[in-house]
Length: 487
Image (cartoon, rainbow, N blue to C red; front, side, top):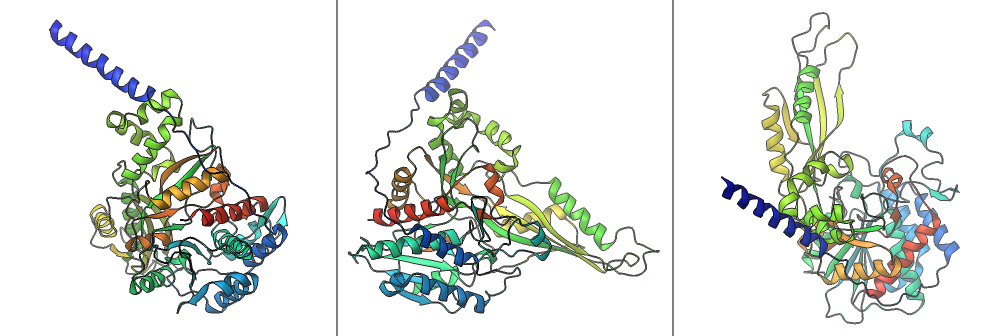
């Protein structure tokens, strides 16, 4: 017995030594990047052009509808008037449903092109929300140190900063090393099935195989990762999948004085309760593991130790992560019951009930496996389960490598413009148009050069969307340097 105890003690000591040494030996890598010289911008003009784009209400309505062609035509005309050198230098193509594709021919046409993306549309502002905005959502007002309006953050900042940077570089006589395509969808907020999907189909027909693709999605965050004092630049190397699932029930209707044991509302409510009570299983995706590996050297020793030894502490990390709503989506397919419609009068039984649940799908799951699991959990023949919008549903994207030309170019540019940051790969919980481009190249990345604090998380799709003028101008500077770094 003593020998067994001694052996167990020895094993424990060795284990502690291994875990401690692995954490102690982790050191941040040395960062060395070329010197950065900011380009001269027309600050006032750049801000006015950005504001003008915000004032065009390019809303994507729900339900998979096509973009409003009149409004999108106004947006295209505005961009043409605002960026004449871009339109004179690049080939511009307007796709059938209004998306834009620009081709900026590079010095060496034998090189694969790079694709820089964005989207022109924005989420709608419901009438009932208008009084809650401090400044009208399409005013572009400059007040309290911000430009106010839909699209200042998601995602006209990306489109306008790309065009502003290109306009400035062209004026200086710059020609990119390799051909660069600007791809601007017009229905990203509605799933991208008319904008991004048609652009990708066109590029497939032309056998375009890009070196890499960069879209919105990541950002620079501060104060959001416990133990990290430096800002962290999140480059999205993968994104979760997306599906809206409809649950519906049918009742007999009639007078509410003689209700059945379960009305259509009651039956559907029971199904929704089951789904919330039976969340998807948790795991640690490869992208999140890569993020932890990259981040670990920058953490204090106590927090570095478990991340440096994921082989031992993974269950604990996942369990703790699930307790934080901002982190839980990195470990499981999330279930968000967003819409419920039923009933028409207080003394009449509802003839039907309908709910929509949004699932953000973790790598390892698929749209089909999510719907199958919903049916299994609900387990009620009276509840119909279906995909609300098959054209917009998508599986999780594959993870892009962090040793590619595209990732290195982003990494270098970020360190040039934001010297203090830590650059790490990230799993994006939201859905972007970039996932459609994964059929063209394995190198698809998501990043917007804006630094955010925790309060800024509410800006996208929320009330009082806004952007500080100096942050927009910094995004233009970043984009210009990014374009110059593309080789």
